[in-house]
Image 1 (cartoon, rainbow, N blue to C red):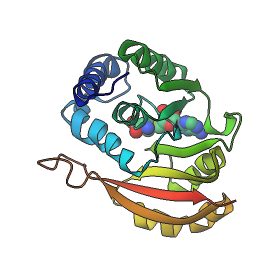
Image 2 (cartoon, rainbow, N blue to C red):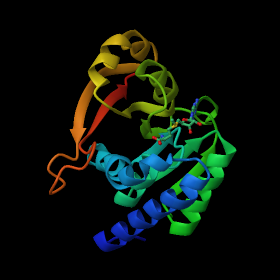
Image 3 (cartoon, rainbow, N blue to C red):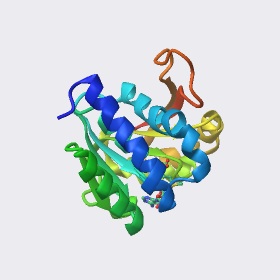
Length: 205
Ligand SMILES: C[S@@+](CC[C@H](N)C(=O)[O-])C[C@H]1O[C@@H](n2cnc3c(N)ncnc32)[C@H](O)[C@@H]1O
């Protein structure tokens, strides 16, 4: 298990190293993203941990190269994080990362969100850069238990998307949406897009 800060930092460094090499060779991350791997991608994903209750069962929908799920699992060994990703090439990469870093609290599931069985199980469903908020609510809310929450990492469009997609969110069983800014004051100097803006919506029915 990775209980100490030193162990978690070493794992995060290991993940950044894999993204910067294999991740780029296999097209999971663009070469121009290398300078932003730590700030925008890894820290910007890890900071959402502050919204997640202890020992939560978390799904990361459309995980791609493991964002935000892998940084989240490294930051919070108490969570069980399932990375949900339909593309085989990406699933292979995710399984290699999990094996290489020995992330015992991460599972990888090859599936589209709509195919996950059973639905309605997770405490928290996270996502980043998968779909506009309304469509995302249709994918993520059915995966959460009633009383569970979807959390979407969004940029400055968060407020606009909530207003624009209110009907779709409600139709998908969502309650009122709230916006949180995560990671404020966590870093000595602000890095790229940390703090991260997250939209949270509880499944109410
Ligand atoms: C732009 S990538 C973002 C990847 C990662 N979340 C990130 O922030 O780097 C979108 C990902 O969502 C996945 N995806 C698209 N539709 C999906 C669905 N219905 N269910 C699950 N994943 C889906 C794609 O295969 C792709 O890996």
